[in-house]
Length: 240
Ligand SMILES: C[S@@+](CC[C@H](N)C(=O)[O-])C[C@H]1O[C@@H](n2cnc3c(N)ncnc32)[C@H](O)[C@@H]1O
Image (tube, rainbow, N blue to C red):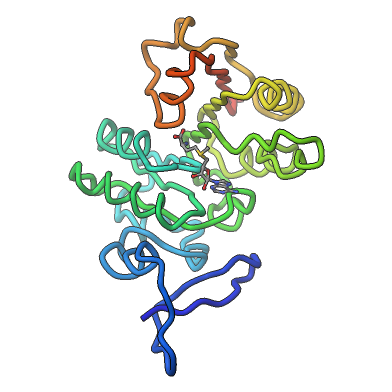
């Protein structure tokens, strides 16, 4: 059985426990996260691994690169990246139980040992990772929050970029894609004002030279079908 409580972030947090009294309907993906995938997917308690991801979670050398993907969705890119780069580790951050389980299930079904998922708000990335603990970061099709009043909810904000810069190692890359032109304009302004170096941006990724290296995510394929362009930006935390 699983029961729910409010965690420190104010979101509903489920954990296995004995439920006394009436039974309640349980999201099957919550149950899977805490049973079949308990060693592969973590909740907010993953902040206890801060600074220890390589040694405690992946049991690998400190020089092995550790990447993160924010908002994995159903995990097509997450699993692809884990499979294509067995000499790197990847941690996915996702809020929805269903897509979180789909992501880790997909990676596991490809035989990947180097992938883990965490149910965590990406905005709190500094609680999960120590300074310079992270290598490359992927943010693909984050929620665009199109209305004016909603813009404060957008992931790409000054403070978030400063936090990402802090947890990333020098020389590492930040990859960003969106289908939303207004969000892209917003995000690129924040990128240019951030401590990152903007290496490349395009208002039509699929017509650019980066197309060959691009992996089409689930959301991206929906926009391709609608003949909408993919907006792309690649940044780097430069070596000094
Ligand atoms: C539009 S989907 C994109 C999924 C995938 N990247 C793709 O390209 O197919 C955005 C995903 O980000 C997750 N998400 C939204 N806000 C988040 C946050 N603050 N932290 C972590 N994940 C978040 C959502 O649950 C959703 O699965």
